[in-house]
Length: 264
Image (cartoon, rainbow, N blue to C red; front, side, top):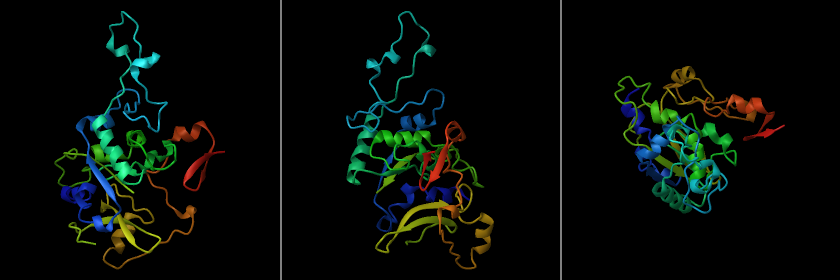
């Protein structure tokens, strides 16, 4: 696998070519300050301070000057003892708010390659559906799978020269000739029998083979097409990036009911 093949699968690279065949999407370049916020694991988990009055998490985001927890006793000169101030990204939040509005009021987010599938359990809906900047920030800040985009996108490349992309993008969504010879793509069928392109991914590496193994796919490739149909939830092979933390399951009794977990 080459770096150029991985780069072609970034949504900001392929979306314009396949716009007419895909779902409606808005793409924004992330400021480096927000990227560093996603990478920072040195302090407590803090959601950005919202500039919006209709935020989805009004009880989690406050003005630090109005919170007793943020008061520092007089005479304390040790900065390490002072609580961290929540970050704020007003320009990005305004862009996100406008995009959500233009896409009908709710979206699902992703970075250059990956969506935060592994953090859906922490959202209020139990899914990737978001209607505010804070909901998006919660999902992508909580996701371990997005660490792949941030730090490990080129780990499987034979010509690896980069540690991370030059720019990161946030995208959300309400066949020409793809330039790579080997690649995978995701589609879904609408109720009126149209096919929509959802995503492109490299062949192998961090791409999940789902109902196949990579050994099976390598053997099938070039010999035709094999379809496998899911007939029940029990037939779905669990993915490495779609689980919940072990401590989440250990603390209480939970059971799997369709698309979400429910307390026993």
